[in-house]
Each structure stands twice: as structure tokens, then as C-alpha cells.
Image (cartoon, rainbow, N blue to C red; front, side):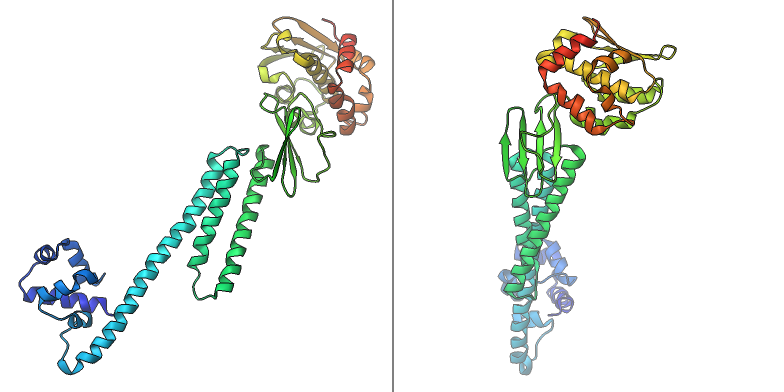
Length: 383
């Protein structure tokens, strides 16, 4: 069906009847833009007004669809051809409409996935539910956009699209967990312990320690080697204060302000704010915390933090000899000599540089032993 030919024919017939586009449109109860669209070959009159249009233009439907006045001897032949062309044209319109609908399904599903990843918190079940819903909707649109394939092939392609999409969602979620230290969206089981939440996924587990506190931290267990009983637990934010992170600030000399600042900033108590001063003559460090000491000593937090900070700083800065910790309530001073003589296994921690396993064993893990903390703190610190 030649739309351009039909459009020119409509224009010629309209002019023969001395009608403008506006006048023809008014008689048909449509806009002049629709008439202009026909005459430009960009569309055909709707079937509901075709008879009325032909009556106004004094032509037959067969003439209209042929784009010319049909001779009597060709009438039957043209009629049959026009019927076939009309059916084909209708099918194409339906096909285009359906294609648009299925494209909308596909991209709506992808949009729902995007919204689920950007709006909902990672530990919200709605994020994972809506992500899967979005993938299902997108898969439905994808399958219906496939043409020229058998139902079986469409089914396999649809399954492949869904599986690939789910793998990509899972990898995206895992990347977010690793990079931003957050809970996974796609966990099949969530267990709540005494001071942690465990998120279990098919390939790794995530432990959320000190949940909803300033020192909340995550441990991503890809080897599934941990359980609630043996997972490394500390009151501090292990992602910041753990030796795996702070070892990067190891230095021979105190006085490198940038290095010293980064080290202190990653140690416990920094979350309350601080300023520090360096004594380069008698190598030492004074840290003024913006908090009262007794205010932060629930569960021996102050004592644990001061022990942890002292051992960490003396282990990581080779020449420092003394540290003073100032609070609005009290001042605590400690020397390298006191730490070496009175903190058990300090030498094992600094053996050949820094022994990370011993650091965790003799410092981090010991902070969970309240009796050890009380006794060691009393021996070391001069208040």
C-alpha cells in the first residue's frame, strides 16, 4: 500500500471538491493536522471515517486505497489487492504498537532495578524484591520483542536473559558490598546475634558488627571460614582501626603531620573529634580529644581505646617515646618503656616490623577480655 500515492490522491480529490484541509477536517470531526498527515504520506485515514471521507470526496474506498480512480475492468482485481494490503497494513500497525508496549515493559523493568539500587537501603528487603520484579518485567518485554523464533527458542532466550541479568545484579551487589562496606541486597538468610547481623548469600557471608553504632563495621567472608563464635569482634570500627588498614601509616619518625594525622584519625576515639601536637625534640605526641573521659567508658571503652591506641602508635611510629591523651576530665600519659615492659607480648607484635597475626592475637582479641584490660590499664597508665 503506497501511502504517498494515496496522500496525493486525497489532496487532489479534496481540491476538486473545493475544500481546504480545515474544511475537510471539520466535516470529518478531526483536526487539520490529521488531513495534512495523510496528504504527506505519513499515515492513512482510520477505518471508522474512511466511508465518510470517500463520500465527501465522491470516490469509492477502492479508489482511496488504490490511490487513483479505478477503472471498471480492474475493479475486482484492485479490490482484492487492497483487501490484502489493508490487512497487511493493519498487522504492521498492531506489530509496531505491540513492539512499543514490550519495549516499555523492558525499559520499565530496567528502570525499576535502577530505582531499587539507588533508593532503598541495602539491608531493605524491598530493594531485592523490586530488583527481581524489575528483572522479571524486563525479561517479559525482551521475550516478546524476539521475532522469527519458535516458542522453545524464545523460552530458552528468556531464561538466558533472566539468568544473565540476575548474575549481573549479584555482581553489582557484591561490588557495592566490597567497595562501600554495606549489607548485601541478595541474601537468602539474615541471622541476628548478640551484637551482630549475619547476611548469608549463596557465595559469601557478611557480618555486620556493632550495628547502629559509631563503630559499626562489616566483615566480608568469601571463604565462609567464620562463624558467630570465631568472627573477629572488637568494639572499634575494624575496617578503620584494624591493622590491615593502619599498617599503611607505619613510619620511622613522628613529625610527618599527614601520616600522623591519618593514623590518629583511623584509631578509636577519633570519632569524637581531636587535635594533636608533636614534640620533635623529645619525640612525643599529645592528643586532645573533644570528649570527657568518663562519658565514653561504657564497657571499658576508654580503657580499651587507650590501650589499643598506645600499642598501635608505638608499634607503627618507630622513634616516638611518649604519648599524652588529654580529655576534658583527665590526662593519661604512657611511655614506650612502659608499653614494652608492662604490655604482654608487645615484642611479639613488633617482631620483624609488624606481625599482623600477633597484632590481632595479642592486641585486638585481648580487647574483648575485660579482666585483661582492667589489670593492664592499671599497670601502664599514670593518671
